[in-house]
Picture 1: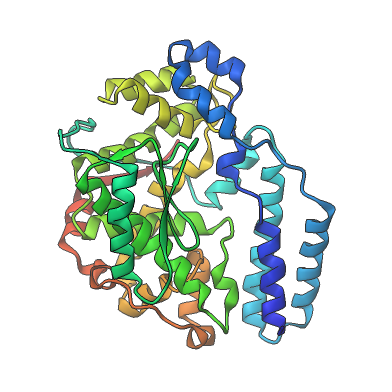
Picture 2: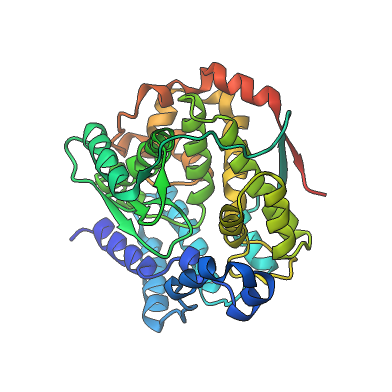
Length: 381
């Protein structure tokens, strides 16, 4: 095992078993207070949550060992990137051990970015169009076929899960669907673009990097980069329809309301006023309040990453070309890492994937031009 492989093995061990999305939960007594009428919908989620963990001494020893390894790293630019990653992992450890989110938690997720409000011109209501719906099992068959077309040389699969808020998420080698969810054909197409093109594609590309194997692994700064790019993919392929746009912006607005002091029932009522049904509004509210006091004053910071990530990509749009996009999908990275990689010798060590043409040419998409004329961002006062 060479030094980079040893580093990667230790690094991956640091992250094993930790997932803030699952470990940040809600208190039964609060849920009873705010949603006594919706108990049958939130009670199964409590059973699937993980309790906050104490980071083991072994993980901290491994973190110290990784930091020591970087003292003699053969490439100073790469070493600086890896030191920065380890500092973020240290912050991640602190968040994992917290029962509740606090101001420091919010800054952890924002990653030094200013908090933004986002609004689009026109009505912002989630009016769903009636369409035939597929069960998760039926959807999994269709997605498996799509994954085989996208990644013919790599083993991928679609799995079913339970007790999760997200209807779909990505694993290292496939996509996970919530077993009680249903999907329209249009939603499956959006899932393919968002989860497979971007999240799964970068997972699989990172796994084949030999010179910079750390690109196979997540770190806390990756989320905004990935989620923003996944939304870009939806937009340029025509899946950023009115309902999807409203869904993304409303979730951001709901998180801001929670942060500004609205309680969970008030946020739920706001979402009901914007045409979500009782259960959909509850699911979105619980996403916003993971690990937070349901009385208001804090929000789960990951929910801001979608809009913040989209904004970061849009402001970079004039300076992005096809080679930059291949690099962006070569593994797990954040904005600063991507900018350093594209401007240094490290880029020459990366095996560049071949993403769909729509993503390579996204910066010139007319759909993005239309969006930027309608979508406005401003700093939160």
